[in-house]
Length: 112
Length: 115
Image (cartoon, rainbow over all chains, first blue to last red; front, side, top):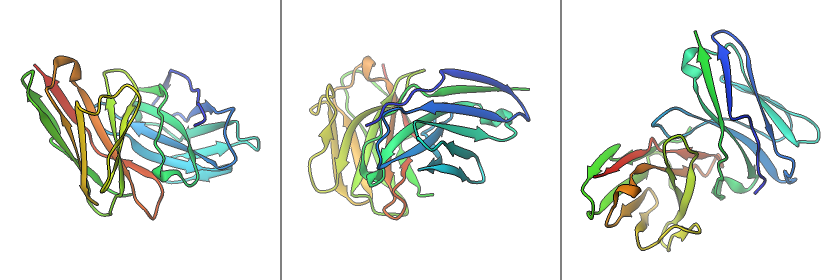
């Protein structure tokens, strides 16, 4: 499974856009990029998943350059409730049934 | 998205006793479920893969005789922490995959405190 690297922590303020970048230099051709959000004492929540270019849903956008060696999770206009840990994972396409290996994640703190 | 539940949400037990944690897929059938453990301020660590109708697959370093996993039906997997000790105190989380989505969904977690 491809290893991912992301910043340990980030700080932002309410209303700002937050971009969290993840490096996955060894990503394989059949790998998806998946992001999860985790609040304290809760299980991770699926945010978004993509393979290339750009994916957008009601929560976030995911930008993936052509070489796919990195990706950026974009959270528009964050609020205090977006304070959480965000995990970037690389998962084989066939791979919902594959085990997920979590890295340290990025601890985002949103301030008033 | 698919819904995965866990029971109990919190449990406190005495050292030496056994504790059972249930993981249920509420709106889909799950042939495979995963069990994770998370210590404070740390990331999730995969413990084992639970397979319906067959033995679980444990990650390196996880004692299969201490963490018993049973996946007797397509909607239920159980994790039993046997002879629990204070160092087993942790946050235990299960996940499963909705077949039509190929995305893993996580349960809300179970906080175990061993006194």
